Image (cartoon, rainbow, N blue to C red; front, side, top):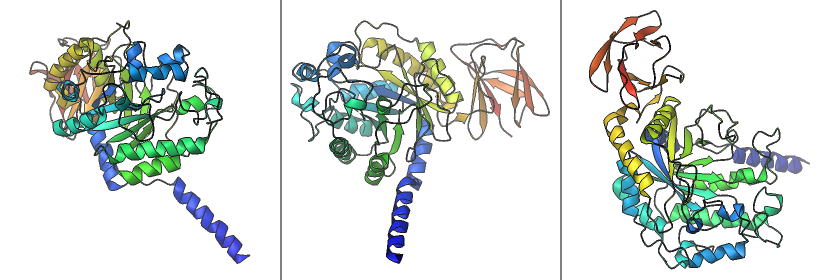
Length: 439
């Protein structure tokens, strides 16, 4: 009897340990570095780009997997240039890149041993991830990897219970044990063969849940995240894990993301979760599409991108801004021209974004605040109706510098901070920035 009790006590302890995640000191440092970077490039690209109708083209057009996989004969990105991609991101002021290694169509953008449905079996034959990893290291850009837990083309993925992928023509019974091992094998490759990876960016969990906003968002399958996350943290303890499940964070995750919205917003109808204490990130498109879509011309302007970046920083959030390169491997001018222009602004004013955290005031219609150890920055987009901004805190001087033109404003000291009259302030560019020196 004692042995029986001891067995179950041991089993309970093992289970409790499996469910408890304690990040390493290196992982915690990686989280801080992630928050300091503030601005990253998301890259949606793969075999789907050939069809020019976004990364969901297989699902949206009901293409069966056997037909869709013919794209392996058509995808030939001869103009892919890792140096240009990384230089474009760096010139825009971006500090990290998240690259699609495998999207929902299952196409692998690296030389994996565990699938024939991969880029090295195209006419291109090369491994772009190997080139990208080397170039990121060379140019000092952190590299993260997107990986879909959903697969529209594999038979062992549990498609029977999924919300998508029902038109792929699969008839074999799924086997999650097999699929889980497949994912572990691929993740091991990604975290072993390509150097330091800053994050694994998961997507696809929502396929096994009721739609966003439903009262019951529990998963229809056990993803065994404790095994997946445990493997990642074993292979690279400092690698951060995020999951675009549109839920509150799951044990083992290191950052929380929001899709097409900033935390607290839900214009896309995807983000019902609250912002957690983990580092935050918003992934947002530059037009209306993630992957290359030939007739999507609804691009954000330079000022819209800058407003989004500043608004994210004011919410203590990173901006992961997406580009969808063409099937030949080039990032289109619609992206690169705007990013170059954003980069000029960031070069001048980026110190009010990089390394900062959300400021002492919640975001307002007039703008947001950011702060570092010594200063508070007021980013003003429009004047408040009464022309007055009251900033809490203790400051050295009632004279405030306008960063855009080095002019000054006089403020009134109050019991709680400073009262600033911006009624006559000349607004300049996408953000007029006031600098307050902390006491």
